[in-house]
Image (tube, rainbow, N blue to C red; front, side, top):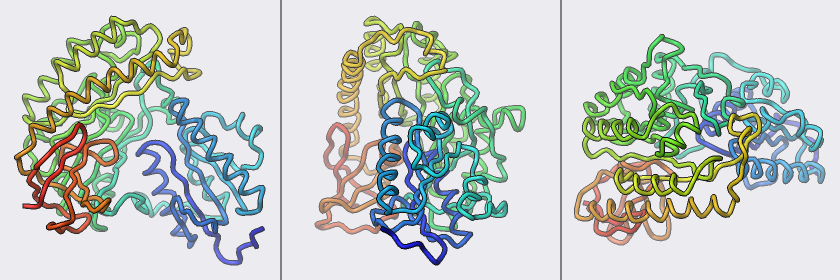
Length: 436
């Protein structure tokens, strides 16, 4: 049994889900620290007075992970190991009423937009003057910059608007200041994230302003890499490509989740784009920004998907040759448009389709990586692992993309530094090299 803390409580924040949740946790931690709380992130020490779990509610697997984590800490509270358990984030926002009945050990549940109320529940004040301040949980040399909240897209399968609300852009001035704060604290790479980054500015300025935002951020002294994530293909702002092509410190990289390629599925998924326009857009991107690395995400097993749709998708992957690709299987989410359709494809079949997509991508990735053997690449080093320095090129984002492995023997580089690397070998998903 823990004895009650006589000092300001120690808080352990647990983050589940995507990079947007990472930013939310970092903002929460900065606010707690400003109120003199002792804050840790995902500490393995069992010495916290308060545990705050920032949950994900996107698809079934993510929801289950969030629930399992809540139950684990609920048991810890019942055993007297922690004094208070608080849950926030997407799962809490969407299922608060049901969950507070099913898991009464949780002291309070908060949605995605209730930070001031959460802070008040632990005796902390919400400080407006801290806007843009964060306590980074990523390595100091890279950080995520959330440029907007929510989403206005009507995708059939997605519950994000139910949990995050409508799209709300942050001002260019605010984001530039937040980015300057990060760079001042040692950040060299900033990744732009949002539910839909290409919608940026439309609500605030009456027109899409992603390209202008990228210009202002690129001008920040000391920022060496700027990376674009989650660019919705429909109504893509082409001026952003021109900025990317002109600026040396903007990575030649776009994460653009297209989800599918067949007209049947794009229509059923309510993606607002056709197969033909998707291919035209990809061609325009590659013509405007030569040598760009395109990352995408595919969704298989959506209601109505046929074998013909999968064959069409696999053939398109051969044609497009995305440098980076991930895939997930459809999850039948209540209150989404697709929930009214019959989820008739068995999970085993969904997984088999996902496996076919990834097998196709393995060959594409291997061929692309082999084309880099013999070249020199600028690499940002993230960590030390298994007698290797491990880093990334401008064509790779942390945690989801390829890595460059450089043996410690005969080489030396500090983590968080850039170095030129001669690529000497490649596998399906990684590169090996030596410092130049």
